[in-house]
Image 1 (cartoon, rainbow, N blue to C red):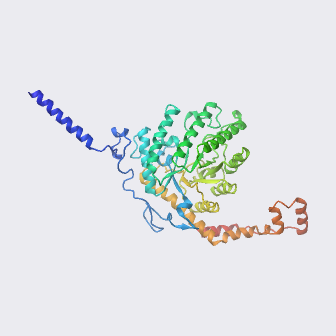
Image 2: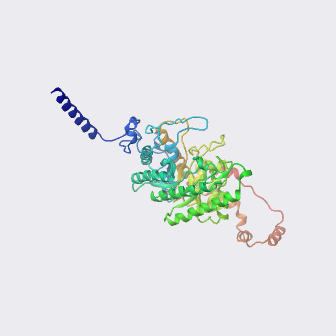
Image 3: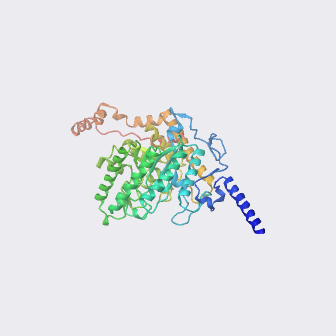
Length: 478
């Protein structure tokens, strides 16, 4: 009799447990990781509790979680600020950045991370990404394939993982958000130690092509407006063991095949190449904008690609960001900007947020002269400093970068509307606004004709360039 009562009591307890399990929603709050929730794709609640949607409050606000200069709906030179700037969040730095460096272990441990690179964790990061984007008030994001989905043991498994995460991203995007661009990560895995499209191994070349093919497909599926090629290891360490001509030819054929596949799948986005002079290889083949433009012309690809200029890469190549933007623009190749900067006292790619107002103003002068960047934009290929470890810092860093470029836009508009700087430049070259100058610029002045004019005019008078006045005019707009 007692045994029967025990069985009945046990069954009643089991019913209660099952009822409670089924009644509690399957959620994984950020403060309850490390449990069975780690395997769940579901998430209910906020990744960034206490962070409101970021609003414009004007230059006098003391609120660090508000814009001082970026007012998205405000019109500047006939176009809304949000359309001039087209800001994008970089998934890899924002959600995969750890703060680790060659001298120290990671310092960032976001509350939603569980220490794994599982599919469930990848989906959780994707949900965090879209909450961040919506609260920041932008509608564009950028990604590498291997940053958003874990690499599998085979290419087929990697593709399945990517498909699963991309399906979630498509759902979370809705109708408002989409990628500014996507790309394939062809530099971390040991298979890419000799490069990808420039590898000395045929198998790596084929693997790289397959990976780019898939990354282009998912970028297209997500509504991406561009696709980027960053040749992280497309270069050499020494010419003693390198056939440079053969490697450059292989790279050209690779990009040619990519352009053909873009058309085959109906992807109308722009293909972008991101120049970088060094790191990790001693010499990268796409050293700077001029080198890359020459490469594209040599191999008949100039009409198929534009450039994604990164400011930090510009300085590593010995140029200013303004120089690289103007070089790309004058060649008809300015497609997108990776908005970051480096430390002038550190000789490597520190990927800091661009906060210098003078540099931002020069950047925006190029963008305005280009008529904007669309379908490109400004991608924040920038990361928090190693010592910044709170989730609030992610917002503050982006707000500061967005405000700097918005302030640069305002300053550049002042310079253009005032016209004094443009007039100084016009006067400097006014001697060419003559009959002889017109012949030179039209290619109709040969050396005999110019020799005759030189003898007729005598010793030329060379006026001041007025550099200090130009700098004064520039600074007056700050």
